[in-house]
Image (cartoon, rainbow, N blue to C red; front, side, top):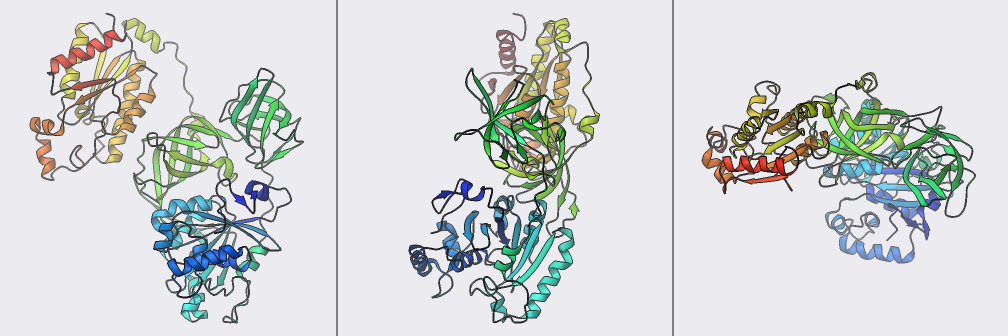
Length: 637
């Protein structure tokens, strides 16, 4: 089978980076095929490879053999099998993964991405679209425009694809009917304004038989436009707007005391020895002395060149920093507005902590507000509180630290990011920064003369959060109350935040959905942080069912200031106690989203204090906590 180009591919014996990054290969066109399932995307790419003579004899022999085993077109060669390389794809007749292929004509070289049509693989389609110049949007002439067609057009638009080919495929099954073609084109044109494509060309074709793919079809003399390959060969891409230098530092290269270099790949622009650059985050300037590669120094480095820069003086630069021109610095902010394409089975919950990776920088982040969900059909905003798998939304994000970025429309390389689950390390979303939030630059932290250490010193104690977590009825509030009484008798300064009490005031507007639970814990964690800053020992008694939110609370304070206490009570024991009758009501369906019944509880992986409520009474468990505080220096012995 033909080679797959991903992510460090080899094509015709050469690394793709050599073929596609050569300075004389300015005519390369990167495009993707997309659309609904079974619209013929893989067949079309197979036809392009077959008709442009990109296949060897052994590949054709393998294709003929596979067609007899897996084919869906009778005795004919099934060209889709050239692309559907996964066994599961062949057996199901669908595309699951993104497959990249290389082919060329006398006039141009091409990299094409075949992306999945099924809705559950929309995230894969977004991956293929992220580097494409053009989208071939296939439509089955029998079915017309479908929701998934619109979804893919929406994603292509959001990801900055400027050119689209509306490929009305399988026109042979509709008798090469001109009216069918024009009806579909008219329907798409009525909606095209939403997408903002710079060019749109509609072509009727049959990928199976090659009509209007490479040569003009004798079956559609009524169509006078270009064939698909003629349009792809002749498309004029916008002359690359001269974008300023963006050089994200991948790592600091310090092999010995005589050399310090900053390694990375030029994301945009160009750099030369003698150029003055600054660190985007801090504005510290330096002059480029050398551009170092394994094969020797260069006189210039341009977009996609992987190099090491040396500077004329040492300045504070670390992985994740971006070197830029002094007169063309990107925005730097810790709050941004962005479009998100959600890629995880677990929903996006505002307030939940994630990791954000932009370029070479990885920092903590959270969605502070979901402004709206983007309707796939019309791009219209819809009210929503969360995002599910394959949803597209527009949201505000808060970052743990300021990060350098450009709006995605100005520079894809420094405006695109991903969100990562902190526990599984799985990518949960792709994002495109639209703009920084002005409030991030208008609001500055006020320097105070009396700090946390001063307040804690006056109280003679080490401030901390004692975070009690466990099922409803586990005994959290009882034990926390006992611990506070013991600390009060010892002359300690404390405050107890109890889940039920806080919901009567600070969090009275919140319900018990997963999104509201996350916001409930976020507010309490921020409040607890303020109490710690006041020098207090704050006791927090909340079910707090999700590990990620408890980790978020821990991350708000300094190391050693957060003590997670797992009040471990089996569900059956908690139900037996059921002082408030809540479990009974939950079992009867009178209470929805009740932790342990129809809403999950995620026990701590490694709590600082583990309390077994089946082995000891509340008094003994409270003493166990006080002994921990004394033994670990939180209280004087």
